[in-house]
Length: 168
Image 1 (spheres, helix red, strand yellow):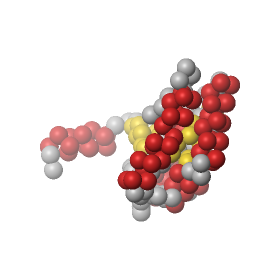
Image 2 (cartoon, helix red, strand yellow; image 1 turned 45 degrees about the vertical axis):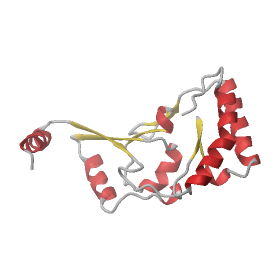
Image 3 (cartoon, one colour; image 1 turned 30 degrees about the vertical axis):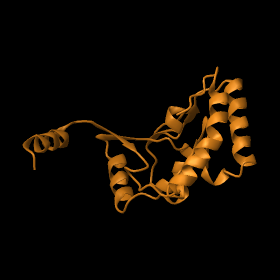
């Protein structure tokens, strides 16, 4: 092993306090076509439980997912601090929930985007979050991805224009 990596882990073991920030999808759990079945990799829950129990390590999970969507997947003895919905939501280590406020215009524009998705039969690709909508293309054929992107891109640009909404 690289001597610098060995040195890092030696330092980490001797630290009085540690902070571990973890993403969910692709880090703690594999990407899945059905997001509700993206359970953590084998052994992750047990390791996280030990770290969370430790007084020396603060564990924070950060995710684009909504916190309520993460909780049933984690199945931890005690939840760590969680930042969900790309930072819009926070669940602190004591279980206190908070969310950034959204303005009325953005909420109306998100509802129009949601209606467009439903009206066009694209709900199987949609993930609703407290402050955003996502359209996922996991395991979708490339030609279908292009067709969907073409169908939604104009409405997304229209709805995000002149507002605080961001099209990404």
